[in-house]
Length: 140
Image (cartoon, rainbow, N blue to C red; front, side, top):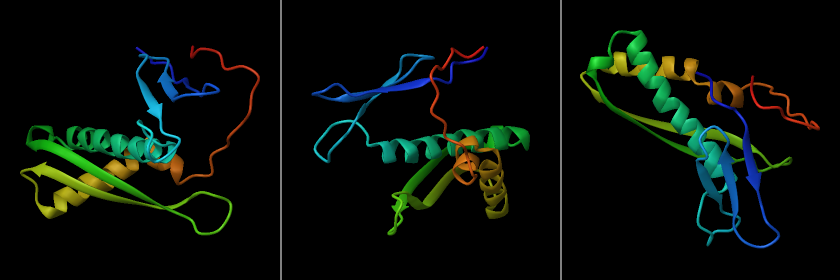
């Protein structure tokens, strides 16, 4: 089964904006200011990286035959904006907390493999193309 990869963001003239995943209807409110509920776009980017990394640790554990030893994994992500233009993130700091019966060497192997598997992280470290198009058909 394949999920739609289309996500839409809507900002009415007044009021709270929202990001919605077409695949499930799951949504997140867009925080345009510090007092707004929801997440800022940069927090959503940090969340995408953290979410991808925790899932990638689980995949790595399964690939290595260690899934029964993995109790839990948590990844905290913090970004640092670049000081010069154009406006962008210069660095992401990732803090892994992997619970389970693993040596430090095995934990590091899980982290390294997670970075290798993580589509979001691989995209953020590549020279990805961003295009404006006239139509986005539903995924085939």
